[in-house]
Image (cartoon, rainbow, N blue to C red; front, side, top):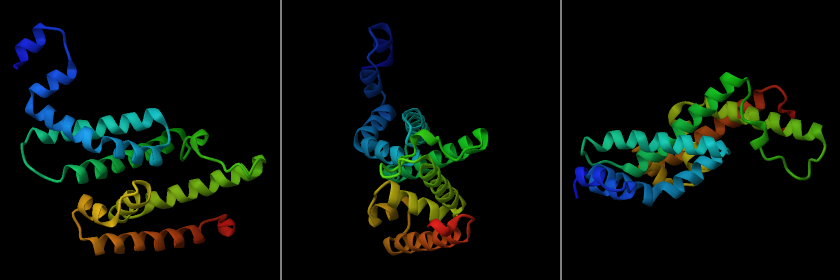
Length: 191
């Protein structure tokens, strides 16, 4: 099937995509890794529109790279790129709105019905989010892929092009740095 026959008849986007080898490869990657990627983005962003934007941006970047025709670790690329996009979105949202996250999307435990406890919980989440954002890139990416993406260590290592023991070491260092930052931050007496 060629592009001319697609353009002259009724447009079926899936059929059109399958006619182009790069788009067919993109659809295959989306079919295979899309659900896991959406799940990770939900954990990081927690807002439907943000998840959709990050998902779209990730696959737009992948589509540009597929034009080169090189073979590389597509799963690692999409998970790492999506995590970076999501974190950038959160930083931009905090900078633009003066908030760390959309407070309505933060889950407040049911056992904290009083507003003071809910505010304290949101403050703790904000401090944790800020501390994660301050980590060095390699440590932050390892932590996000492992904890929010729920990838096992070999998958994290593959996504970051490092060894499995290195992925374990990066996560361990990230947790130690987070603990130190949260202990030293104001209001840490609750943690």
